Length: 162
Image (cartoon, rainbow, N blue to C red):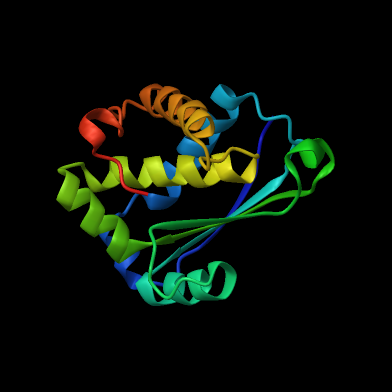
């Protein structure tokens, strides 16, 4: 199954990660392969590469939280309807928060970016981390996907931030 990826990068800060578009495509391919996602061929994922101000506005509007965040996901269809959905949904990432988190945890910016793209995608296909059991299941899949991409375990030593 192959996804269609629409990328919008209104923030010039993303130029500091020159391979962001290519890495997103590679990461989503690994996500599909490892997750066994059953979406229809050509289903679209939209990726918004923006900054803290826009993510804060989205976070306030959709989650009632007046603060920026690293990643937000907006599924287009319920997980049990992915096979028929023309779009899986939208993922939005804030460069400044992502960069701060990568620096604070001593992780390469590209690796943290791949982790958050993975995390966002898994939310689109029905994964969550509201309970310990859900979190363990989601984190295990994230680790497998990232290992496929040569990215170290983001949860080692409690390094991951979400």
